[in-house]
Length: 96
Image 1 (spheres, rainbow, N blue to C red):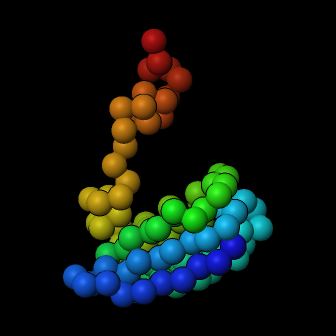
Image 2: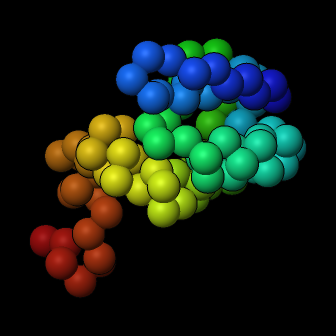
């Protein structure tokens, strides 16, 4: 797993990930992602070259976006639930 970052216009930090986001990939990305997300005002995560995204890999990119400096940007720009997600993310008691 490789991670790189660059500053774009408008104060956006682009983080590009390349490889497998499994347990091993998440371990490589975890600390770097926390450092980048902690200092970024706006964060764009580029997953074009990610060939596998497991639950630990997903965790390593979602948790850092909840840092105080990037929480608003993450909620407003990249974590918009779809109808599919809304249907399957409800508690079991509310399922028909």
